Image (cartoon, rainbow, N blue to C red; front, side, top):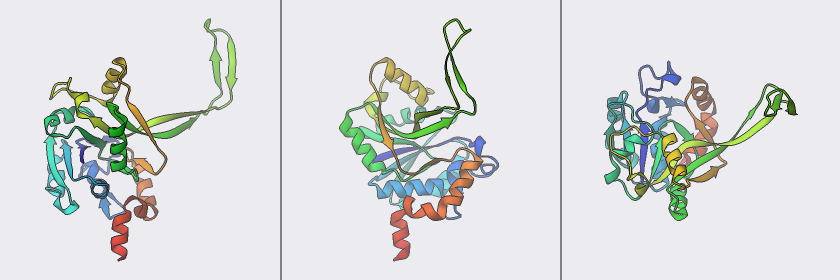
Length: 245
């Protein structure tokens, strides 16, 4: 099983933590970097090879991860000279990938079983499967529904809570789905989704109810560090057991 990890962003929202190191190498709990956690998890879930899509400070990621042997993985690289979006980097290495593979952001902490997720995608026969998560937003205001004239209130809800599903930044992809795109072009996840919906090739949703934290902002990073002592045994149970032995 193969995974493509997107590790080329500048991490501007996470500054000042990313001033000197790329976001995937930011340490969690003074123990492992985010990227290391992901690599150890992938190996534990049955993956044998990884492509790292690097760009900003990519030389540091190359020097840190190397060929991946210390994680039990075979790691290669693809470079983004200019940002190509979420899916764009995958197009440049598409011919080297297996028919079904994982694409994921390099700044995600979760105890999702990546191997099981990919296998469910293969069995579903979907073009793409998105790992999804339940979120809710509670309005700070009373919400008014206005009629077509714009002058009459027809319903009122006091500070309602809106429930929805969001992408976890983890996708299972079938290679044939991307064959119509050109290597080197900019292709975001949003464009891919809209193209598939327009073609009535509906992507799948795989709802996850475990732990998930997207480390995009300083407050997210601070939370990850506060929770690390508790979450390390959940995120890396195989390493925790080895240390105990």
